[in-house]
Every structure is written in C-alpha cells, then in structure tokens.
Image (cartoon, rainbow, N blue to C red; front, side, top):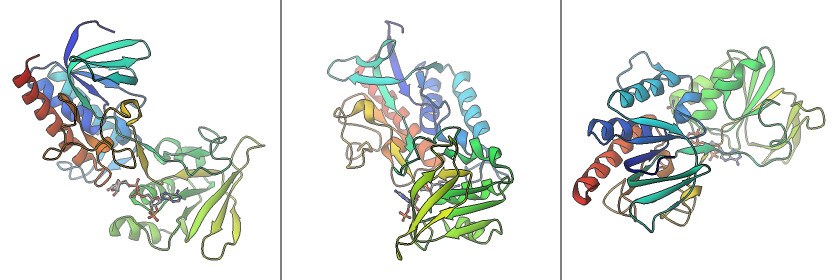
Length: 314
Ligand code: NAP
C-alpha cells in the first residue's frame, strides 16, 4: 500500500461506493476505491434490474455495475482490491488498516453494504457453497436444472429468486414463516400465481439434510401453527431472509443502531460523528435498500466529502 495520503478513500464498490466515486472523481479528487470481496456489490448477483431509472427495458445487474465502474474510471477514480480490517480515527489523516498495510486518507466514505443473513439451522453452514445451500439464486440457480429446490423468505428477494429459479428447477418451494408475503404486490402476485412455485406458508426451516452425503438431500421444515415437521425433498436450499450490515471493521468507532447499521448525524444522511468520515448505502440504510437509494446516498456522501475537503484542506 502507498504511504502517501489520499484525498478521499471509498470503501466498497456497490451502487453507493461507485456513485461516490463518480462524483468525487468528477470533482478532481482522484478517489481511491477499495473493492471488497464482491466487487460491484450485491447487484452483481441479481439478474434483471427493472426499477433503476433510465432503463425502460431493465438492465442486467452486473452490466449496470460495470457501467458505473467505467464511468468512475473515466473521470480518474482508481481501484484496488482489499478488505479493511480496522481503522484509526484518532488521527487526521484517518488510517485504514488492511491485511497487507495501511491507507492514510483525509476524507473517507464507507459504503460497505450488507451481506445475506443465514438461518442458523443445522446443516446450513456445512452445506453452504457448492454443496446445495446458497444465498444467490442468480449465481447458482443453473446448477439445479430439472431438480426441486426450496427458497426461504417472504420479501422481494425471495420472490425474485423463486421466479428466477423456475427457469431451471422443476419445482420451487417458497418457505415463509407467515401466511402473507412481505414482498411488493406485483412480485407477490407473480410468485404465488406461478405454476412451478409451491408456497409453504407459516413454516420455518429446522434442518438442511445431507451433511453426511456432502450435498443437500432435503429441507426439514416446521409449521409454526401446528408444530408439525415435514421434509421437502429438495437438492438446493436458497436463503433470502434479509441482510446484515458490513459495519464490523468500524465497530465502536461510529454510531450504529441495534442491528449494526450506521447512524449518521442528525441533519445529514452521510455525515458521521467523526469529521471527514461519511457513510452511504445499505450499511447505513435498513429502510429502503434500493440500488437507486444507495446511489443517491453515494452522491450525498461525495458532495459532503468534497465540501469537507474544501473547508479543511487536503
Ligand atoms: P426483507 O424485505 O427484509 O425480507 C426478508 C424476509 O425474510 C421476510 O419475509 C422475513 O419474514 C424473512 N425472514 C427474516 N428472518 C428470517 C428467519 N430467521 N427465518 C425465516 N424467515 C426470515 O429482505 P429482502 O427480500 O432481501 O429485501 C430487502 C430490500 O430490498 C427490500 O426493501 C426490498 O423491497 C428490496 N428489494 C427489491 C427488489 C426489487 O424491487 N426488484 C428485489 C430484491 C429486494 P417476515 O416477512 O415475517 O419478516
């Protein structure tokens, strides 16, 4: 890592991070973007994005993120891969500590996003990643051609992924802990009326079966109203039960809510309690969590960082 001091470092390369990169790059700040484990963020695991303004026919999630990255590069944003382990905000410039060194920066925009939540049932961790349990239907759905699969959750993600899985799977069980979907009306209607999707209402996962065989052989579920347990004979189990914010490396340094989401200062969605440190996107938003709201927050953080640098010098 360079020993020079950056004007602005952006941690994260999802919609929020890349929009912040476009704005700070256009302001001639030559931002350094730290791409995490998933360059491009959550949208790179989605199929068609139908609600990002400006694309009447929708756009592939990966392509959208690639476009944002190219747009930021065009104005001088620089990209490196690396994971922040912790930070030191007691000094100015601020210090980010990575496995292979430190980065010093005057302004910092944290746009680390959120990660899929796991259900915490036996068998889930053992069979995660290539053995039948997945948090990304877009990535892994094609492996389940003509097989039965289950998806857990009742939000837009669960519905979107269930519909995507119908392209490959012979049957998709949608396991939801209540008897009404949380998803938007249009997604709920598309899902419940799809001939390949079978709703498993009022049910929670109890165990993913197949640990001994090394691949999923079924999903045991319990009906929360009757306490009756049954097994769905599926080869794939997909989780779509929400996310947790990736705020761990900054724990104790910035205010968070009870669920770990950053809490910006009153009067600004981007400013934190530490001068020159700003937050944007899903790591600071448990309410909207849309690509467009993350992009908007990235823009706000960039403008705040730009103003802060102009006032405090770099
Ligand atoms: P979400 O809206 O928080 O839904 C999570 C679902 O998982 C809920 O139905 C919840 O049940 C269930 N759940 C949570 N913990 C569980 C557990 N331990 N066991 C079993 N079920 C559990 O999350 P999301 O679907 O990922 O959506 C996040 C945000 O992104 C939302 O604002 C959504 O609208 C948006 N989104 C939009 C699109 C789109 O517009 N194309 C696509 C995807 C996501 P309860 O309902 O009972 O709480």
